Length: 143
Picture 1 (spheres, rainbow, N blue to C red):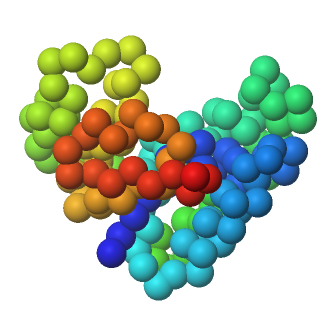
Picture 2 (picture 1 turned 90 degrees about the vertical axis):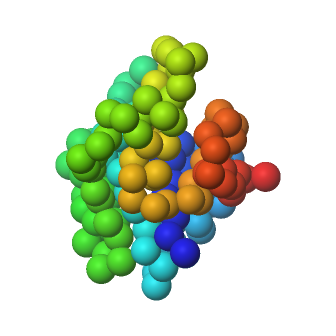
């Protein structure tokens, strides 16, 4: 069964000073080892790059080149996919997001829509907001 991770898991896996570093790193190592297909959606990867290179978020942000190498190391795995939006994205987004999605929920609905379009049901995340999307299983790897 395929799965994906949210940017927060990638962030914790790179932030060695955080208490959640070890469990996040262990999860990523397990997923990176395969053989199950892992989807890393572009909004997640871009969010990761934004977070780990930002000096207002980390006292010692990663150099951009190092953060990009981290992404490439995952994308180079034969069982990792990084798809984007496909035909029908907007109607699917409208269905997933509903009429009340706004503000900070929009990126979550975007990711949930990509998951639905690519048949991914499981997301590893600390973000409880993903539980509101029908058909998705949000697993907190830190619980």
